[in-house]
View 1 (cartoon, rainbow, N blue to C red):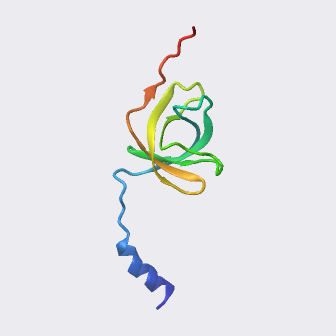
View 2: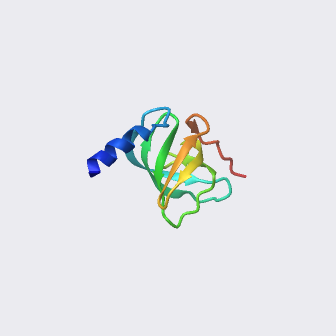
View 3: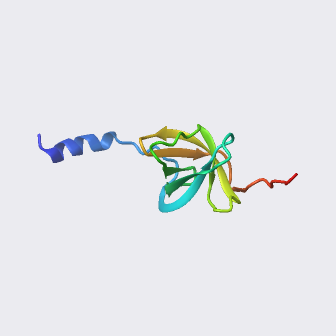
Length: 107
């Protein structure tokens, strides 16, 4: 059996499971956990209505749920949950709408 015949046989078994199409974006963002003060750099590789694929440092420990911050000033963010992980990328689903950060008050 040739390589092309093998590919042709396997192709029908692939079923796209995404609910919406993805758009390639490649822009910087930050991961902000509920327990750590400092945000961590990441790169959003693509987005859809329901989630995103994010490149992270291999050494980075990513919590199951976190805020994905889209602006350097932290004013635009979205709550996310990790749905898959690889060595240097994670896939997330959004847990809510894009929202401004909660105001912080100085004592």
